[in-house]
Length: 210
Image 1 (spheres, helix red, strand yellow):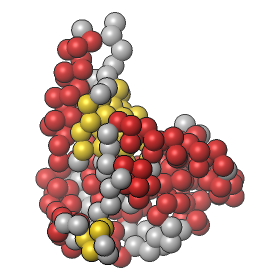
Image 2 (cartoon, rainbow, N blue to C red):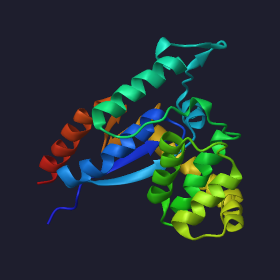
Image 3 (cartoon, one colour):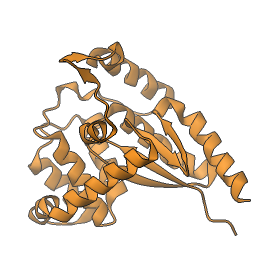
């Protein structure tokens, strides 16, 4: 029996489009039989590793990065998908990178996906603010049972930082330059609006393995 096709799902916990993509991962698995591995990262670190930056010379490189446009666009996609969506523009996030490290720490506990889903819910459905260490501790305790102080210690553990660097390197080596990105073998698909292309890549990989 052939092993299921694996999709590497690279996401950032503060990304609207990563949230939208996350809502499609379970249906994707059920409909294609694939396996999805969730890889959290800090987008700025990936952009630096890939040699890209959406902000050039202090200005947005493209109108697609305008916050008001992205909020409207994300809301339209959420309506299409039939999923709840609350724009995160008003949420206070003292350290966006720390959110990514919290997801990496949860991944080290084999709770990466469930913690990421809970964090997405807090940010894009509940509008929880501020998303600070206290909030991360509460959310982590909900899904892992880990004492908040222990979760903070795990976030600060040098191995968590090292694992994040490995994830960023894995994404870069796969050809990712933004989030969400999906790797299926040597194929890279970027953007939650390209999920039909991801499905085709999965089916092609299944055919190749047959």
